Image (cartoon, rainbow, N blue to C red; front, side, top):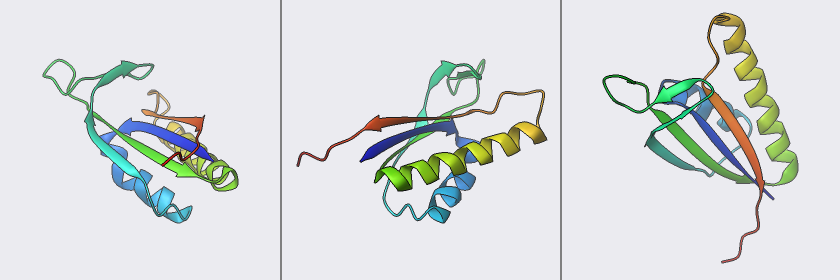
Amino acid sequence: MKMLMVVFRDSLQDEVLMLLKDCDVKAYTLLQNVAGAGETGMALGSLASPGINSMLLVVLPQDQADRSVEALKIYRDGLAKEHPAHKVPIRAFALPCAQVV
């Protein structure tokens, strides 16, 4: 099993959720109003840094996690082509995962 942690600007939320639905993801945890700073800048929900992030936690079998990551890469690459002057504010991380309870 893998846990995908997907962090993205909240403005991309509908598209990210639809993309994962198309990958047959049926269960996830959505955390909204996630603040932070990284490669694409600060997202602190403040006047100086008005953006804010969302984060998804998704636990999947390895093959479905691989398909979902590939779909996220394709989505990110498409946004990068549409907006070449900006870094796309979406990141995904895969962690080993074992259900213990």
